[in-house]
Amino acid sequence: MAITPRLELRQGQTLVMTPQLQQSIKLVQLNNLELSAYVDDELEKNPLLERKDGAVSESEAGEAPEDGAAADDDPMASDSALARNADMPEGEELADIDLSSDDYWSSGGGVGGGAPGGDAGDMTRSAASLPGRGAGSETAMDGIEQAESAPNTLRQHLLTQLGLEISEPSERLIGSALIDMIDEAGYLSGDLGAVAERFTCPMERIESVLQMLQGFDPPGVFARDLGECLAIQLRDAGRYDPAIAALIDNLDRLAAGDAAGLKKLCGVDDEDLVDMVAEIKRLNPKPGLTFDHHVAQTIVPDVFVRPAPGGGWSVELNNETLPRVMVDNHYHVELRDLATDSEAQSFISNCYQNANWLVRALDQRARTILKVATELVRQQEAFFSRGVQELRPLTLSTVAENVGVHESTVSRVSNNKYIGTPRGTYEIKYFFSASLSSIMGGEAYAAEAIRHRIRELIDGETDGNILSDDRIAEILNLSGVDIARRTVAKYREAMHIPSSVRRRRDLARAARGL
View 1 (tube, helix red, strand yellow):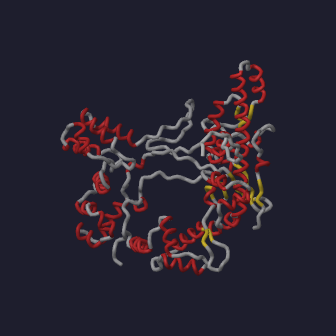
View 2 (view 1 turned 90 degrees about the vertical axis):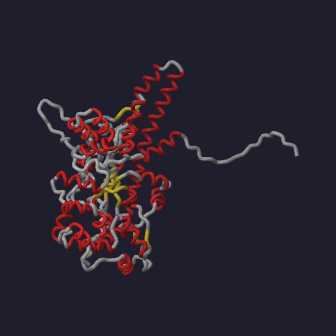
View 3 (view 1 turned 180 degrees about the horizontal axis):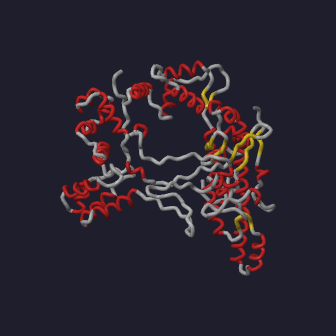
């Protein structure tokens, strides 16, 4: 058989992902902050795009546009067009202690935060700023513009003290190298021997500088382990006596709950041991975390769900998160008439097409988010009316089928998008939950609702009634939930709830004041 070239005609179907389609998919999965940054970039590149009057970019300072500022030619859908109503019917021992857990320490030195509250008018698109140590809040002063102090970092704080407390140049150099070895918690990570080799100096010199640095603020920095961190703070407070030093040297026994052994080693009675443990709990195991390392950002809902006046729920987009852009047709005509060469004409034509595409893509994104959110509210109406215990099992495919979009589109809409409800702000994907079957053959239960039920049972425990995983599974089975003990254990561990043995010891320790 001879091998010769020949021509053949074949017919087939393929899916072609055009650049516009790829960018449309990208827009759907962006959250409101990322979308605003994307639109800002497009506004800089495309002269035919302009921001709608009253809209502001994420980087611009100023007030949000008023609801009535929308013009008739706004390419984005109006509030009334995008709003929808979803019409729906109405032992004498210490406990095992995890010394690395923040819950063990009564004063971790962290920064507290609050959840966003208020109605839509109170929500802003700007990120909330948490000032660091020594940074005050914005203060209005006559003749001076309002300004916020830059957060002071742990490294900057230590370098300032280094310049004030140590004057010898070689010791400053060593101190600067040790500061670079500090982690976010304030602990010294790394090998001191490597520092001594780097500066070709004896280890005693490095240890001497380290001892000076351990006197810096905040107390406890430059420690190499938890015991040294606690000891530094106790010395700073003048409370490092032999008894508490022995307790610090035996933290493993404290974690294991060996009260008898600790009393013998420290030479104290029950009352003194309780006082020493309370003293340790008041210390800060992670002193470096008193300084801000990340700027927290306010969660701004993409969709609001409110009770409708006539019953059911009203679902509407948060217009503050929607970039408002439009195509400048007059400028397009002007530029097109002025363009004389083919390259300029091609550039103007591409800009005009891209501008129109972006406006349509933003409109389509908003409508898709609204349709998915409306379907979620319809499916989870019992949650909004009665709480998390009524959450129904729901899959992406179910919503996709009812909305008329692909399952991957629902997945993209669910990520990093939030719904503001009377019960709080939730990520959209929170409402998608696996199911557990019913023993009675009825409707299945959502896994999230079962986790909530497990937490309620554990929160209701008393000293004489600690529920094991087997007992919790038995209680849930009696209420109709088909769940095994290992599933209860998995859910409990996912919620960071200790075992029944640990909870029993914790209650006993609390009763004794330990």
